[in-house]
Length: 328
Image 1 (spheres, one colour):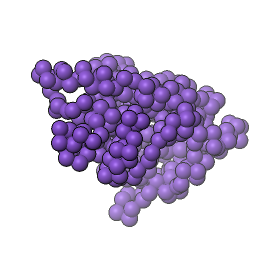
Image 2: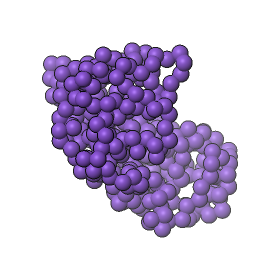
Image 3: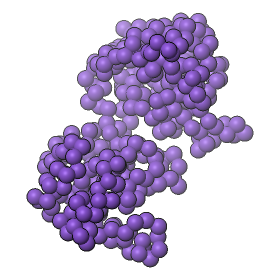
Image 4: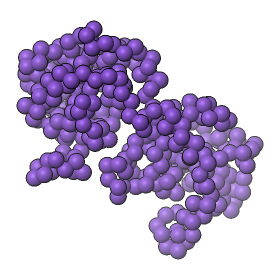
C-alpha cells in the first residue's frame, strides 16, 4: 500500500529485500536525495546498533542517519530507537487511548482488494454467515482466553437464524474438528476467501486474529461484522475505554456496520446476528481507510521536518531523557 501511494504521488523509491548491506550501499550513492528509509523494526535496531557499517556515527560518517530510519510495526507500542514518532503503525491506536505512544499512523487501504470483487446484491446472497478464523483450532478451548464463543453457540445460532455457517481455515489432524454446525472449506486463497465473504450476510469474529483487515474488506463488500469483546469492566460494561476487542479500532463503531458483542453472551451473540441480517448494508469504506487518505499520510511523512524533530529529541536525551544518543 505504501508503494502504491508512492507511485501515485510520483516519488522515486528504491527497494531492497532483507539486505541492510545493500540498503546502505544504495543510500550512499545519493544520500542527499533520500528523505526516508522504511524498514522492519528488527532491521532498524540492527542498523542502529551497527556503528561501524550501518548507522551514521563518529566512526562511520557515511552511514545512514538514525532520523531517516522508520520502523514498520503492527502493534500500539513504539518500536524504534528514536521512539514513537519514528514507528509507523497500521491503525490509529491513539483513538482508543490518547495516552498511548504517539506513533505515526500510516495505515493502509482495502479499496483495491475490495473493489476487485463485484458487490453481490443482497437478494442474490446465500443464506450464510462467514466465520472468520484461519485455523479450526481457534474455535475451541485450546485457543485460550481469546475464545469468544463456546462451541455450543454455533448450532444454537444456526437454529435460531437459519443461516449456514462456513469458514475457510487450516486444519491439523491433532486439532478438534470444527464445531457442529460449521462447514469448513479449508485454506482458501485471497480471491476464494473474499468470494465466500461477499456472498455472506454477516462476518463473525471468534476472538482471533486480532485487528485483521478482513472486517474492513467485509464491510466494503456490504457484509457487517460481529466483533467479540473479550475483556471489559463488568461494573460499567458500556465503558469502551476498558474494552479489549478482537478488532480494536472497530470497537469504536456501531451498527449497522459493526456489532460489538461481549464474549460468552449467547443471547447477545444470536441477537447481533439476527440484527445484522435484518439490516443489510451497502458497500462502505471508512474515511481513514480510503486510498486518498493513505496517500495524504504518506505525503505528510515524507515532507515532515524529521531532522529538526530529531535535533530536539537529541537535546532532550543529552539533558537526561531516557533513550540512546545518536549522531545527526
